Image (tube, rainbow, N blue to C red; front, side, top):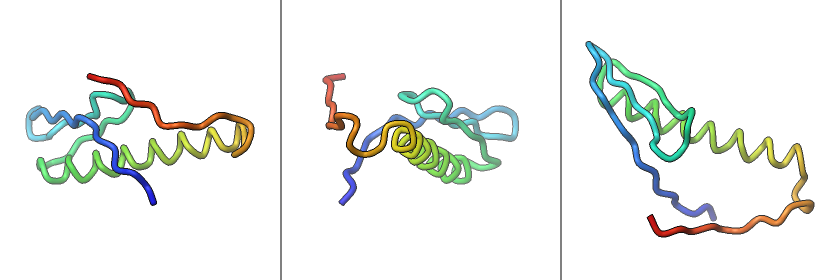
Length: 75
């Protein structure tokens, strides 16, 4: 079972578009013609980045060659 993770989504109207990005992860950004579309696009972009990062780690190190654990910080 996958755990839920919380991120901060930022939305900014720019002309006729909405820009969207995740504050905690550089490179997770997108846009949409409506706020709803920007939110949907951002959720997909974040999901793809997290999946890609996971696959890159697995391909580079395999499942048993690294220590993997949860990390929490007070923010």
